[in-house]
Image (cartoon, rainbow, N blue to C red):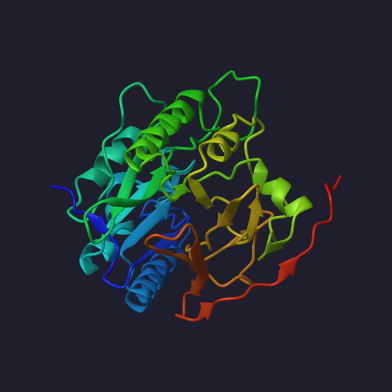
Length: 325
Protein backbone atom coordinates (compact mmCIF):
# COMPACT_ATOMS: atom_id res chain seq x y z
CA UNK A 1 0.00 0.00 0.00
CA UNK A 2 1.27 3.46 -0.92
CA UNK A 3 2.28 5.80 1.88
CA UNK A 4 -0.24 8.57 2.59
CA UNK A 5 0.69 12.23 2.42
CA UNK A 6 -0.65 14.28 5.33
CA UNK A 7 -0.16 17.74 6.77
CA UNK A 8 1.86 17.85 9.98
CA UNK A 9 0.33 18.61 13.37
CA UNK A 10 1.32 22.27 12.92
CA UNK A 11 -0.57 22.32 9.59
CA UNK A 12 2.48 22.50 7.32
CA UNK A 13 3.59 20.27 4.47
CA UNK A 14 7.10 20.65 3.02
CA UNK A 15 8.38 19.57 -0.38
CA UNK A 16 11.97 19.51 -1.63
CA UNK A 17 12.28 19.68 -5.41
CA UNK A 18 15.42 18.22 -6.97
CA UNK A 19 15.90 19.13 -10.62
CA UNK A 20 18.17 17.67 -13.29
CA UNK A 21 20.16 15.31 -11.08
CA UNK A 22 21.19 13.52 -14.31
CA UNK A 23 22.97 10.62 -12.68
CA UNK A 24 25.14 8.50 -14.93
CA UNK A 25 27.22 5.33 -14.61
CA UNK A 26 30.58 3.94 -15.63
CA UNK A 27 29.65 4.07 -19.34
CA UNK A 28 29.90 7.86 -19.48
CA UNK A 29 32.84 9.29 -21.37
CA UNK A 30 33.57 12.00 -18.81
CA UNK A 31 36.20 10.79 -16.31
CA UNK A 32 34.88 13.32 -13.76
CA UNK A 33 31.38 11.77 -13.75
CA UNK A 34 31.88 9.67 -10.57
CA UNK A 35 33.02 12.80 -8.75
CA UNK A 36 29.99 14.80 -9.96
CA UNK A 37 27.58 12.00 -9.09
CA UNK A 38 28.98 11.64 -5.59
CA UNK A 39 28.73 15.39 -5.05
CA UNK A 40 25.15 15.45 -6.36
CA UNK A 41 24.11 12.66 -4.00
CA UNK A 42 25.86 14.43 -1.13
CA UNK A 43 23.99 17.63 -1.95
CA UNK A 44 20.69 15.77 -1.87
CA UNK A 45 21.50 14.23 1.51
CA UNK A 46 22.56 17.57 3.01
CA UNK A 47 19.34 19.26 1.88
CA UNK A 48 17.05 16.44 3.03
CA UNK A 49 18.67 16.28 6.47
CA UNK A 50 18.48 20.06 6.79
CA UNK A 51 14.92 20.56 5.56
CA UNK A 52 13.31 17.30 6.77
CA UNK A 53 10.70 17.34 3.96
CA UNK A 54 7.43 15.44 3.85
CA UNK A 55 7.91 14.79 0.13
CA UNK A 56 10.78 14.88 -2.34
CA UNK A 57 9.96 15.55 -5.98
CA UNK A 58 12.38 14.77 -8.80
CA UNK A 59 11.40 17.27 -11.48
CA UNK A 60 12.74 15.40 -14.49
CA UNK A 61 16.09 14.46 -16.02
CA UNK A 62 16.62 12.18 -13.06
CA UNK A 63 19.29 10.43 -15.14
CA UNK A 64 21.18 11.08 -18.38
CA UNK A 65 20.09 7.86 -20.05
CA UNK A 66 21.86 8.35 -23.38
CA UNK A 67 25.16 8.34 -21.50
CA UNK A 68 24.33 5.44 -19.20
CA UNK A 69 25.13 1.77 -19.72
CA UNK A 70 22.31 0.75 -17.38
CA UNK A 71 19.61 3.45 -17.05
CA UNK A 72 17.65 1.45 -14.48
CA UNK A 73 20.71 1.20 -12.24
CA UNK A 74 21.30 4.93 -12.70
CA UNK A 75 17.69 5.57 -11.67
CA UNK A 76 18.12 3.45 -8.55
CA UNK A 77 21.32 5.29 -7.71
CA UNK A 78 19.60 8.66 -8.18
CA UNK A 79 16.87 7.87 -5.64
CA UNK A 80 19.08 5.89 -3.27
CA UNK A 81 19.58 8.74 -0.81
CA UNK A 82 15.85 9.42 -0.50
CA UNK A 83 15.11 5.73 -0.06
CA UNK A 84 17.86 5.31 2.54
CA UNK A 85 16.57 8.28 4.53
CA UNK A 86 13.02 6.97 4.36
CA UNK A 87 11.37 10.02 2.77
CA UNK A 88 8.31 9.81 0.52
CA UNK A 89 9.16 10.75 -3.05
CA UNK A 90 7.76 11.00 -6.56
CA UNK A 91 9.19 11.81 -9.97
CA UNK A 92 8.28 13.15 -13.36
CA UNK A 93 10.57 12.53 -16.31
CA UNK A 94 12.42 14.82 -18.66
CA UNK A 95 13.93 14.69 -22.12
CA UNK A 96 17.14 13.01 -20.94
CA UNK A 97 15.42 10.21 -19.02
CA UNK A 98 14.40 8.27 -22.13
CA UNK A 99 17.14 8.96 -24.67
CA UNK A 100 18.81 5.63 -23.93
CA UNK A 101 17.69 2.03 -24.30
CA UNK A 102 14.94 2.15 -21.64
CA UNK A 103 11.63 3.85 -22.56
CA UNK A 104 10.06 6.34 -20.17
CA UNK A 105 7.12 4.04 -19.38
CA UNK A 106 9.62 1.52 -18.03
CA UNK A 107 11.27 4.32 -16.04
CA UNK A 108 7.90 5.17 -14.52
CA UNK A 109 7.23 1.51 -13.70
CA UNK A 110 10.64 1.37 -12.04
CA UNK A 111 9.87 4.22 -9.65
CA UNK A 112 6.66 2.48 -8.57
CA UNK A 113 8.70 -0.47 -7.25
CA UNK A 114 10.47 1.53 -4.55
CA UNK A 115 9.17 1.31 -0.96
CA UNK A 116 9.08 5.07 -0.33
CA UNK A 117 7.78 6.07 -3.75
CA UNK A 118 4.24 7.51 -3.70
CA UNK A 119 3.66 7.93 -7.46
CA UNK A 120 0.70 6.19 -9.08
CA UNK A 121 0.30 4.03 -12.15
CA UNK A 122 -0.54 5.84 -15.37
CA UNK A 123 -4.18 6.39 -16.32
CA UNK A 124 -5.26 4.55 -19.44
CA UNK A 125 -5.25 6.26 -22.83
CA UNK A 126 -3.29 9.33 -21.68
CA UNK A 127 -0.09 10.36 -23.48
CA UNK A 128 3.26 10.00 -21.81
CA UNK A 129 4.43 8.23 -18.67
CA UNK A 130 4.07 9.62 -15.18
CA UNK A 131 0.72 11.43 -15.16
CA UNK A 132 -0.88 11.22 -11.73
CA UNK A 133 -2.35 13.32 -8.91
CA UNK A 134 -1.58 12.98 -5.22
CA UNK A 135 -3.64 14.49 -2.44
CA UNK A 136 -2.47 15.65 0.97
CA UNK A 137 -4.94 15.08 3.78
CA UNK A 138 -5.58 17.25 6.83
CA UNK A 139 -5.93 16.08 10.44
CA UNK A 140 -9.46 14.86 9.75
CA UNK A 141 -8.32 12.69 6.84
CA UNK A 142 -9.93 14.93 4.24
CA UNK A 143 -7.96 15.98 1.12
CA UNK A 144 -6.72 19.53 1.73
CA UNK A 145 -4.28 19.97 -1.16
CA UNK A 146 -3.40 18.29 -4.45
CA UNK A 147 -0.19 17.79 -6.42
CA UNK A 148 -0.43 17.17 -10.16
CA UNK A 149 2.43 15.41 -11.93
CA UNK A 150 2.53 15.51 -15.73
CA UNK A 151 4.85 14.14 -18.37
CA UNK A 152 6.01 17.09 -20.48
CA UNK A 153 7.63 14.67 -22.93
CA UNK A 154 10.98 14.91 -24.63
CA UNK A 155 11.04 15.76 -28.36
CA UNK A 156 8.40 15.97 -31.12
CA UNK A 157 7.75 12.76 -33.00
CA UNK A 158 10.11 11.87 -35.83
CA UNK A 159 9.03 13.67 -39.00
CA UNK A 160 7.17 16.38 -37.11
CA UNK A 161 7.09 19.83 -38.69
CA UNK A 162 7.81 21.24 -35.25
CA UNK A 163 11.30 21.20 -33.76
CA UNK A 164 12.55 21.83 -30.26
CA UNK A 165 10.95 20.16 -27.28
CA UNK A 166 7.67 18.31 -26.82
CA UNK A 167 4.59 19.72 -25.09
CA UNK A 168 1.86 18.60 -22.73
CA UNK A 169 -0.74 16.97 -24.96
CA UNK A 170 -4.45 17.66 -25.28
CA UNK A 171 -5.47 14.34 -23.71
CA UNK A 172 -3.22 15.10 -20.72
CA UNK A 173 -4.93 18.46 -20.32
CA UNK A 174 -8.33 16.76 -20.51
CA UNK A 175 -7.16 14.28 -17.86
CA UNK A 176 -6.03 17.15 -15.61
CA UNK A 177 -9.30 19.06 -15.94
CA UNK A 178 -11.27 15.91 -15.13
CA UNK A 179 -9.21 15.26 -11.99
CA UNK A 180 -9.48 18.91 -10.97
CA UNK A 181 -13.24 18.96 -11.50
CA UNK A 182 -13.72 15.84 -9.38
CA UNK A 183 -11.57 17.18 -6.53
CA UNK A 184 -13.44 20.48 -6.65
CA UNK A 185 -16.76 18.64 -6.46
CA UNK A 186 -15.64 16.63 -3.45
CA UNK A 187 -14.43 19.85 -1.82
CA UNK A 188 -17.90 21.37 -1.83
CA UNK A 189 -17.45 23.16 -5.14
CA UNK A 190 -14.31 25.01 -4.05
CA UNK A 191 -11.08 24.30 -5.99
CA UNK A 192 -8.60 22.36 -3.89
CA UNK A 193 -5.29 24.27 -3.45
CA UNK A 194 -2.88 22.57 -5.86
CA UNK A 195 0.64 22.55 -7.28
CA UNK A 196 1.78 21.13 -10.62
CA UNK A 197 5.14 19.51 -11.39
CA UNK A 198 6.59 18.78 -14.83
CA UNK A 199 10.00 19.08 -16.45
CA UNK A 200 9.93 21.37 -19.50
CA UNK A 201 8.76 24.95 -18.85
CA UNK A 202 5.63 26.26 -20.53
CA UNK A 203 5.89 29.14 -23.05
CA UNK A 204 4.38 31.34 -20.33
CA UNK A 205 7.68 31.15 -18.44
CA UNK A 206 9.19 33.43 -21.08
CA UNK A 207 6.16 35.70 -20.94
CA UNK A 208 6.32 36.18 -17.19
CA UNK A 209 10.05 36.97 -17.30
CA UNK A 210 9.75 39.40 -20.22
CA UNK A 211 6.66 41.30 -19.09
CA UNK A 212 6.28 40.91 -15.32
CA UNK A 213 8.33 41.36 -12.16
CA UNK A 214 10.21 38.17 -11.25
CA UNK A 215 12.68 37.16 -8.57
CA UNK A 216 15.73 35.05 -9.33
CA UNK A 217 17.89 34.40 -12.37
CA UNK A 218 17.48 33.49 -16.01
CA UNK A 219 21.11 32.98 -16.93
CA UNK A 220 20.21 30.65 -19.79
CA UNK A 221 18.91 33.72 -21.62
CA UNK A 222 15.69 32.07 -22.72
CA UNK A 223 13.44 29.42 -21.23
CA UNK A 224 13.73 26.32 -23.41
CA UNK A 225 9.99 25.82 -23.73
CA UNK A 226 8.10 24.06 -26.56
CA UNK A 227 7.45 25.87 -29.81
CA UNK A 228 3.81 24.83 -29.45
CA UNK A 229 1.54 26.27 -26.79
CA UNK A 230 -0.93 23.47 -26.14
CA UNK A 231 -3.04 25.44 -23.66
CA UNK A 232 -2.18 23.80 -20.36
CA UNK A 233 -1.66 27.14 -18.63
CA UNK A 234 -5.07 28.32 -19.83
CA UNK A 235 -6.65 25.15 -18.43
CA UNK A 236 -5.06 25.76 -15.02
CA UNK A 237 -6.34 29.35 -14.96
CA UNK A 238 -9.84 28.15 -15.88
CA UNK A 239 -9.91 25.40 -13.25
CA UNK A 240 -8.69 27.78 -10.56
CA UNK A 241 -6.89 25.23 -8.40
CA UNK A 242 -3.19 25.36 -9.29
CA UNK A 243 -1.32 28.00 -7.29
CA UNK A 244 2.14 27.27 -8.70
CA UNK A 245 3.99 25.23 -11.30
CA UNK A 246 7.48 23.80 -10.79
CA UNK A 247 9.92 22.79 -13.53
CA UNK A 248 13.60 22.08 -14.19
CA UNK A 249 15.24 21.63 -17.61
CA UNK A 250 17.17 24.94 -17.77
CA UNK A 251 20.05 24.43 -15.36
CA UNK A 252 20.91 28.10 -14.98
CA UNK A 253 17.39 29.43 -14.33
CA UNK A 254 15.80 29.57 -10.89
CA UNK A 255 13.35 32.47 -11.02
CA UNK A 256 9.77 32.79 -9.79
CA UNK A 257 7.15 35.01 -11.42
CA UNK A 258 3.38 35.28 -11.15
CA UNK A 259 1.06 35.30 -14.15
CA UNK A 260 -2.74 35.46 -13.85
CA UNK A 261 -2.63 34.25 -10.27
CA UNK A 262 -0.28 31.31 -10.85
CA UNK A 263 3.35 31.40 -9.71
CA UNK A 264 5.67 29.97 -12.37
CA UNK A 265 8.68 28.54 -10.56
CA UNK A 266 11.97 26.98 -11.56
CA UNK A 267 13.81 24.64 -9.27
CA UNK A 268 17.51 25.01 -8.62
CA UNK A 269 19.63 22.56 -10.59
CA UNK A 270 20.88 19.77 -8.35
CA UNK A 271 23.49 18.35 -10.72
CA UNK A 272 26.88 19.31 -9.38
CA UNK A 273 27.93 20.96 -12.63
CA UNK A 274 25.78 23.49 -14.45
CA UNK A 275 25.93 24.87 -17.97
CA UNK A 276 25.01 28.31 -19.30
CA UNK A 277 24.47 28.54 -23.06
CA UNK A 278 26.18 25.17 -23.40
CA UNK A 279 29.30 26.27 -21.53
CA UNK A 280 30.17 24.95 -18.09
CA UNK A 281 29.58 27.65 -15.48
CA UNK A 282 29.47 27.16 -11.73
CA UNK A 283 28.43 30.68 -10.65
CA UNK A 284 24.97 29.44 -9.63
CA UNK A 285 25.43 27.12 -6.62
CA UNK A 286 23.53 23.87 -7.09
CA UNK A 287 20.80 22.90 -4.67
CA UNK A 288 17.04 22.52 -4.52
CA UNK A 289 13.81 24.48 -4.32
CA UNK A 290 11.80 24.07 -1.14
CA UNK A 291 8.02 24.56 -1.06
CA UNK A 292 5.89 24.76 2.07
CA UNK A 293 2.10 24.62 2.21
CA UNK A 294 -0.21 25.43 5.11
CA UNK A 295 -3.44 23.47 5.53
CA UNK A 296 -6.50 25.59 4.87
CA UNK A 297 -4.53 28.36 3.16
CA UNK A 298 -4.46 29.07 -0.54
CA UNK A 299 -0.81 30.05 -0.76
CA UNK A 300 2.68 28.61 -0.35
CA UNK A 301 6.13 29.76 0.69
CA UNK A 302 9.22 28.83 -1.30
CA UNK A 303 12.95 29.26 -1.01
CA UNK A 304 16.26 27.83 -2.23
CA UNK A 305 18.56 25.57 -0.22
CA UNK A 306 22.06 25.23 -1.70
CA UNK A 307 24.59 22.38 -1.64
CA UNK A 308 26.22 23.61 1.56
CA UNK A 309 22.91 23.82 3.38
CA UNK A 310 22.63 27.60 3.11
CA UNK A 311 19.12 28.99 2.71
CA UNK A 312 18.27 31.66 0.13
CA UNK A 313 15.05 33.35 1.22
CA UNK A 314 15.22 36.44 -0.98
CA UNK A 315 16.40 36.64 -4.58
CA UNK A 316 17.13 39.70 -6.73
CA UNK A 317 14.20 41.42 -8.41
CA UNK A 318 14.06 41.38 -12.19
CA UNK A 319 11.99 44.13 -13.80
CA UNK A 320 10.26 43.44 -17.12
CA UNK A 321 12.22 44.37 -20.23
CA UNK A 322 9.78 43.32 -22.95
CA UNK A 323 10.43 40.74 -25.63
CA UNK A 324 14.04 40.72 -26.84
CA UNK A 325 14.90 40.22 -30.47
